[in-house]
Amino acid sequence: MYKKFTAVALSAALVVPTMAQAADGGESQFSGASDLRADLDHLLSEHFILAASSMQKTYDESSDWEEVEWALDENVKDMGTALEPLYGEEGAAEFVRIFESHNGYTDDYVKAVKDGDDSAKEEAEQNIAGFADEFSSFLDEATEGNLPKEAAEEALVAHEQDVQATFDHYAAGDYMESYESYRVGYDRMFDISKVLSGAITAQFPDMFDGSVESADAELRSTLNQLAGEHFALASLELEKGYTQAEDFDFVTWAEDEHTADFKAAIEGIYGAEGADQFETVWQQDHINAQSDLAIATLEGDEEARDQAIEHLKTFSQDFGSFLATATEGNLPEEAAQDAVWTHEEQVIKTFDQFVEEDYEASVKTYREGYAFMFGIGETLGGAIKAQMPDQFGDEAMPEEMPQTGFGGASDQSSMMAWLSGMVALALGGLYLFRRKENQNNA
Image (cartoon, rainbow, N blue to C red; front, top):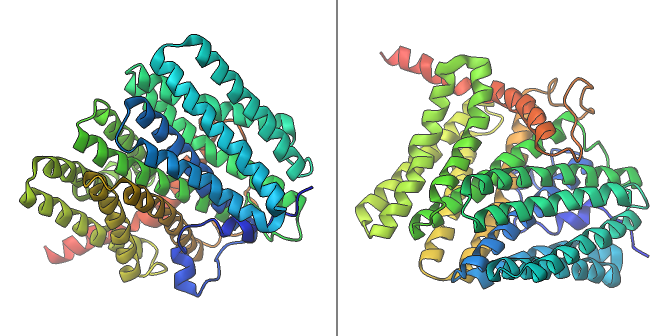
């Protein structure tokens, strides 16, 4: 029924060209299998964050709930558009139909919870279960059994449980549990991406060089996950801070947990002093400045706002130097600084458009900014790969490295700890460089 699935189709769904493509004339530094996995990383993880946001905003009757729902639907259409050249109009339309009905069922679920209508809630849950059944059958057929229906359905059910748990805890005011579920659910999308891309490459081995399980593909996916989650949480922090939302402190908690993912890896290699140096660079002129920007905007304090933006500019320069030094020039300093500042500008622009109540523009900028993070993952991953080819070649991962599947956060955390340690080995050079520079200047 369906035409063949290739990496070209999914690549068409990207909103902006990646940094790596811009830097090297359009040729990826990674295999076709890695490109496919990265594109699925982007689209599937974006679905999760938009679904979680849409449910929150619909429940709260936020002014921008319709625009966020629009963005969620656009994410689905992007997937359908990407598939149409290969599956045809019929296949793409079926994909979009299944997903759009799923988005409607989650709307019904939110309304039922808000109204306290247990009967309507149960009906919505049954419809969501029906989506998992229908879509798993679609995936089984599309991949010609390389992703069996049973395994696909298990993954989809787990994803739906993540989304519902994130929302249910939010609606109950259990914000810590909500953001714990958010992080687990976001993490799981990268597990699903890995398994789905693996099924597709197994189905069409002649169309995809390389492996989705190679060390460089794992590195790139891990960087994608960390970069994407940072953008999502940074945008949330600004919005929640400006609106003085009750869950603001728990968004900052999630950001601190995200920061800790890096700090723990660096501490394991360079000790507490090196880890503290990293945390200072990351927090002081970056994470803390985001909170300052939100509060200054809320209070109409232009001087404080300008100061917060200056801190973010300083961070962009410092962190760009950090990356250039750490990768021994494989990521050029000016390019790194420009890329980090482009990211910061996208976060600020998304926030400012929200404040101005230009919600359509805000969600469009949000989607562009989120897509850009996957270019950062590609570029930084490519620089580290070039610097450390023995550790991050394109061979399949050694057996002793943790493997992931649909197991969820525990397995993925183990893999991320290993890879983050390797990334820290590359990135931690900045601390030693700065220490030596300070000693020379003393």
